[in-house]
Length: 230
View 1 (tube, rainbow, N blue to C red):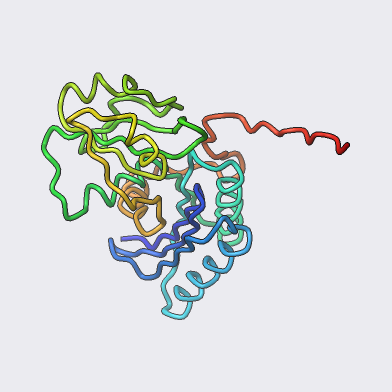
View 2 (view 1 turned 180 degrees about the vertical axis):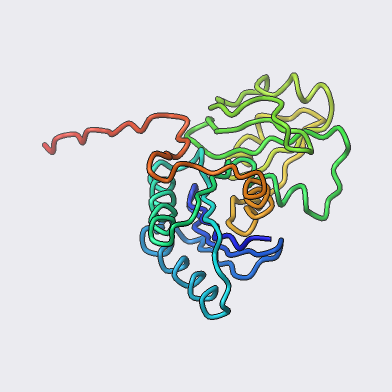
């Protein structure tokens, strides 16, 4: 199996990991961000130094592609591209919302067969970036920006158990009070959870064009003009 460098910077958490043959060789997370421009490069250097010191050739770079923080995604993708160019490696893009699902699917809690997963990334106010997946990560509803009300996910909640998680989920807990709604705390998109998805893409040779790949922002970045000082 290949050795893959993983980079995740879509939220305030910055993380980097190195995996080989389905096992983690290195991982580092910083939960005190956002300071991705300062920490991500250091973690990547540490991961590559680990690979070099153990004579392990790195075969690809995987990056969390979004949605998420505009600045964070740009930093992560730029760093991934730099490593790909410098080492002539292929680039793998992993959907951030699917990365969030990995620890839920592999966690201690056994999910019902008919469970649906709704990973949520905080946008603003009562808005989140989310999608709906089944336990096989088949997309039941595509990624979109949702303004969360008690009706937003009702059609899925009426069918059976739905699990909400991610940094956008907790603020929705008081709004979504359906008996089939379950909330899982402490789930973040982390590089160490990217490798099952990245290895699958590697096996299928699902690579991105290093020159032209862009993160999936979902929404265009809007710069706010500063008000003049009085």
